[in-house]
Length: 433
Ligand code: DLL
Image (cartoon, rainbow, N blue to C red; front, top):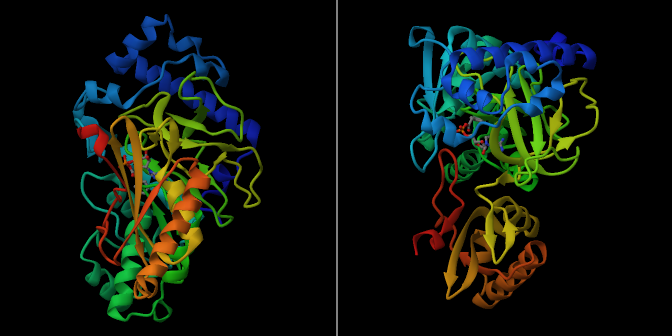
C-alpha cells in the first residue's frame, strides 16, 4: 500500500527530470539567499546556471556539520525569520548543537513524507500510534506526530520515558503501532516482562524504529519480544528529521524519498562516489526545502546503494541499513570496529541480553577493547565455571569477526544503563587520557 503512489512509484525518466528541476531551484535558492553557499560556490567559480544535468551535482561543494556550527544559530537559513515557523536542533553531544528551521511549506512537506513513511512501514489511518520518540528540540517526536495526523491515524503524543506508564497506556488505549528508538523498544519489552504483561494480550502489531543504528538480529529480538513486525526509519535534523528514508514491508534496505532528496555514497577519504553495492558515506542534497536548503551534506552515516528494483513497486533508490557513523567507528590497533558488528555477534550467540557496552582504553601503547554484556537470568544462575567458559566462547566469536583481541566481561542482568532515546554504546577512555 502506498500513501502517494504517483510519486512513490514514479517512472525513472520522469523522476530524473523532476530531480533536475528541483536541484536547479535549490542551488539558486542557496546561492542567492545564504552567504555561506555563495562564498563556497564563488571560491570554485561555480554559478547556479552551471547546473545543467544531474551529474553536475558532483561539481557542488560539500557541506559539513562544522559549516552549520560555524553559522550558528541561524546563519544557514535562506528565508527571513518571519518565514520560519519551527526551530529544531540536533542531539549532538559535543560542541554547539546544529540548529534547523522550517517554513510552513517545509512542515507540510515533512508531514507528507512522514505520512508516506508510516504507510510504507505498515501503518494506516485506522491505527492508534503510540509515539514514544522524544518531543522537544529533537525532531523525532514532532516529526512523527505531524505525519500521524496527516495520515489520519490517532496519535498518542506520549514522548519518551516513564516506561510503566507507556505500558499501561499501550494496554488501555489499545495502541497498535509503537514509534521510538530500537533501544527504547527493547527496554519497553523488558519492563513489560517485569510487569507480567504478555505482548499477546496487546493490540500492538507494528513498530517503526530508528534514530540510531541497530542490527538485523536486534530486529528479530524486538519482533519476538513485542510480538510485532518492525521496520527501520532513517533521518537527520540537518536534512529534515525522521522521514528521509524507511524500509518497506520487504525489510531489505531503506527507500530514500528520491523526489525530495538526492543521494550519493562516497568514499569518505577520496570523496569520490563508490560503486553501487559498495559501502561508503551517505551524502544528501535536499530538493524541496525552503528554510534550510542543504547541499551535498556529509552525513557521516555508512551504507551502500542497493542496485536492485524493489518488489514493493516503489521506484525510489534503496540503501542498506546503516552500520554506524564514520565517527562512531572505533579504530583499535588500526582495525575498524562498529558497535553494530559486536551487537550482531552477541545476539547470534544467544545466552546474553541485547544490553552491551564497548569500553576502549589504552594500556601503554596498546589499545584495548572490552565488551561488557549482560547475561540472561538463566545463564547467570548457572555455575561460575559455566560462565567463564561462555565468556571465552564469546571472546573467540568476537575475535574471529572483528580480527582483534577482545576481553569479554559478563555482567549481571539489569546493570547496564537503559536508554529512553538514543543508546550510548561506546566509552572511549583514550580520549580522556
Ligand atoms: O535521529 C531523526 C530521527 C528521528 C530519525 C526519529 C529516525 C527516527 P538527529 O538527532 O539529527 O535526527 O540524528 C541523526 O542519527 O545522522 C544517524 O547517525 C542516526 N540515525 C538516524 N536514523 C538512523 C537509523 C534523528 N535508522 C543521526 N539507523 C543520523 C542508523 C540512524 N542511524
